[in-house]
Amino acid sequence: MSANQATRIDVNKIPLDEMDVSDPVLFQNDTIGEYFRRLRAEDPVNYCAKSPNGPYWSVTKFNDIVRVDTDHKTFSSDSANGGIVLGGLGNPEREFGSMGGLEMFIAMDPPKHDLQRKVVSPVVAPANLEALEPIIRERAGAILDSLPIGEEFDWVDKVSIELTTMTLATLFDFPWEERRKLTRWSDVVTSTPGNGVESWDQWKQELMECGMYFKDLWDQRVGGEQKHDLIS
Image 1 (cartoon, rainbow, N blue to C red):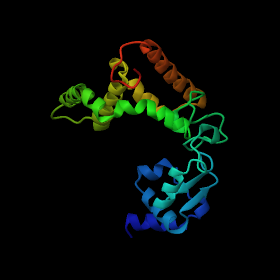
Image 2: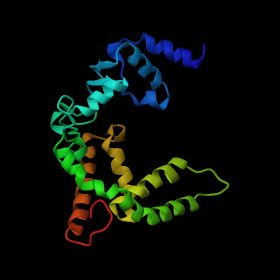
Image 3: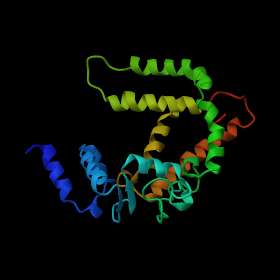
Image 4: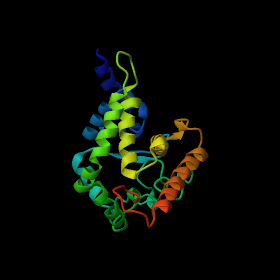
């Protein structure tokens, strides 16, 4: 019996109401596909009542996903209704979607969401990205040129993370020497105690630090020269 066959048999033995596709281990060992396969076939709108992340629904078929994504009146993203991630509703510790009190426009519904999105859309418009192209190319080239030759290195850290962080730092015109703060904060957003942070207090503290850092950048640039970055 192959490992894949064994995985399928094990998945088929799990009661549908105990299927927890929020378990990160399923993604790490690449068995999540078997769980989704069964849910799509037998219970495409599945409710998991108990998980480390709290209760949640899994929607696993295309048309159903489109319906959820396009009907904000029925399926709200607003942080007041639980936000956009697991652990939001009924979890005052996490306060997800508001970053500990600082609203994020991704956790808003129209029309408020549309107004917020309209503000930032010009920054990622083709003309503006073209203006940023030279510095992005220069920084990407520097990252690749810095890679060691003839020895092992961590591709994820030195290339994948660094390229992503570099691009974000450029879009925000974020202080270059502190760009890895962006990496840390993006990790913290989806962390839980014991998995990236030690406690919910640490989670809140670091995200408040993130919010205050960006507020300081905003205050510094108010009334200043109009540039091509998101904050200006």
